[in-house]
Length: 174
Image 1 (cartoon, rainbow, N blue to C red):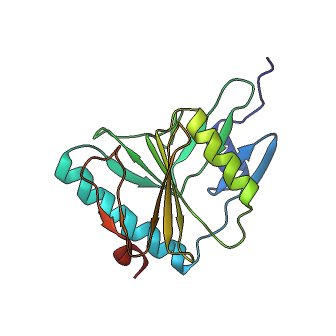
Image 2 (cartoon, one colour):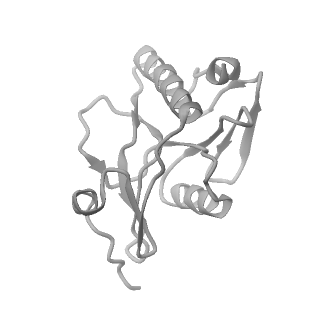
């Protein structure tokens, strides 16, 4: 097994910018969100913040770097949002997968890149990955057993991992 040359997050940000990601020996910049993406990010963040406070179960974080993976495939990703089950202060980055990872699609996103990212999160500790499609007005919730919960407007988004969380997609997508 060969270790990857994945840089520490602080070095990656210093050398490549705050929106830098790294996988497979390549560095790239995550695209800047468009209006639909930004709206979804704010609405999801508010709903998850309210949920976490009501249930005393954690809180959301947006654009938080995660450096994770096995020694031969360490990567740095910048999920659009995560939900972590902690009330403690967090550092500038994390060295493990959060329980819930949320990625919001943008027009330039390549399907194979998204699929690889989702599989990587789930193989390395995430217990739920949400794929939000603002244009399609839908959310898919993927689990480590590869089951998928599909929500389409006007459904209400739920995730068994976040017991009691509900967000009508009409609120998310306007």
